[in-house]
Image (cartoon, rainbow, N blue to C red; front, side):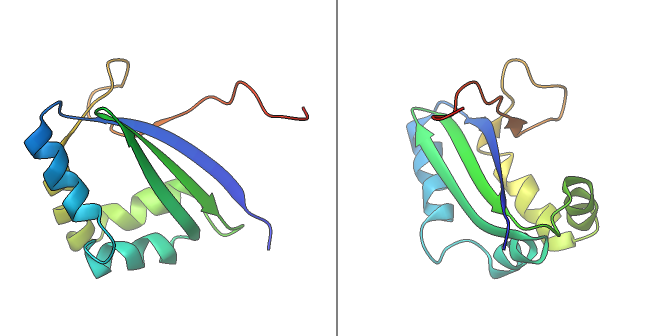
Length: 115
């Protein structure tokens, strides 16, 4: 199976209590099952989120069926995903260069070994 990698960044509110709560929501087995199902159903085969300070980086491996616009539409029509997204806004904040209401911003690849 061919996969493609997508990398994004988002900030958490710079508050240690909120960051701890956010991490608890994302600890192994704590993410809502409807959320992990919606991720897998969209063609995302693997996803990891890394944190340094209050800046997060999300790395997704997607299969050939993944379409970001289709994923956005699926999420918009899923009440449980919308509930999760609204909850996550309690912890997340826009990057300084984000458009209004935009959370996760695609990273620009600037180096790859061997290219």
